[in-house]
Image 1 (cartoon, rainbow, N blue to C red):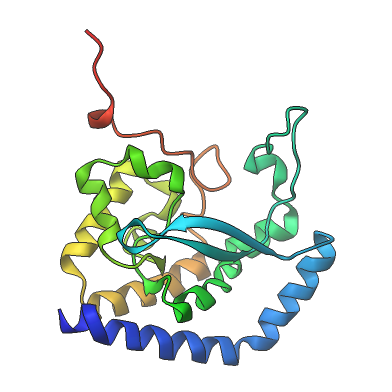
Image 2 (cartoon, rainbow, N blue to C red):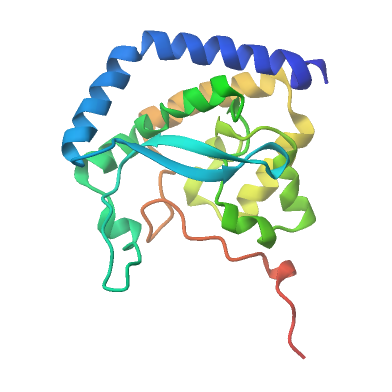
Length: 209
């Protein structure tokens, strides 16, 4: 518990600050490129639930255009993602601004990925346990299939991580993350740019009689 409650946070601050300082030239270069590419703000900001379900603003590099249908609804990810955005997403460079979230305390380097606020009422009690820890830039589910596995598999992996969180496991996840980025596996689910929307598990859906 000492690692989980104290040491992990210290490592997050030191590592994230160091990476931001060393990677500042790349950070600024991507900001300039994306600002020109999208003709505006290169940062994507969205409300996500963090530890204990408390909301925060997640930061990512923008990879999709803001294109709407006639009713004012955003088009699908497949129609909005750009070639440059796809390349940045494949290399996971879109996640770099989340280091700021880590320094602020919204996130950790390692933990369950922060999902949409809309999903909160859809979770089972077991799935909701993913919010017992800070969400992470990478996690156990990300190195064991990422977006190529089912939602249920992903949530099972998140719960397993919460129960087994320790320094060696976090180190293993970080090392695996680097290898996954180099290979570029598990970026998307079949038929989707990233992952299909979560609509609830079968055990959460009432049976009609």
